[in-house]
Length: 220
Image (cartoon, rainbow, N blue to C red; front, top):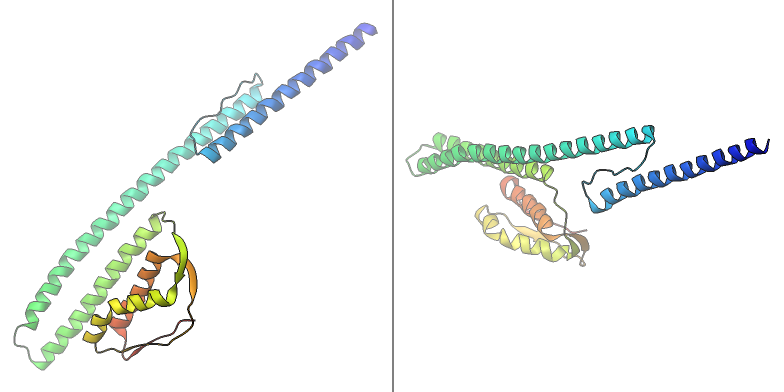
């Protein structure tokens, strides 16, 4: 009876130590995964365990991590190729468009009747709209694939809009458009200055191209 109790006690102790050893290894796995996430490393899991099930689990985890890394690299490569494709398409479209604009400018210098002048203006308007679409397409495609992080800072949006409007004054004067900016208290925003300038300039560009009257700007 005593022998049986001793053997049972030894078995329980061995089992207890084995469980502790397994828990220690599971803790090690978890720690290694945390390290991969925090330090962005590609180190495979290192397991020192004689349990077949957990060893197979670690192998499968390593295979999954390796497959994930492979897919990540493929995604980066696909994005790079996509950017190159967009750039090539944009260039291929800009080249004939520039040629078309050149011929239109030559036509402006030749004697044309009233109907032909109207047709030329319509053609030029469509060409300008096509050029804008190409630029927007290129910019949108780039921004979708680019992982740009905004550089946030406190900005007086009133001053920024005034600066952008001043840079467009010559264009507005050429179009015979007056710009009216209603005075308002300063409005401060947290944003990326360069991105905001691009947004404002896009809006002003649309105003210059499509406005049928004076432009009123109000900041709220």
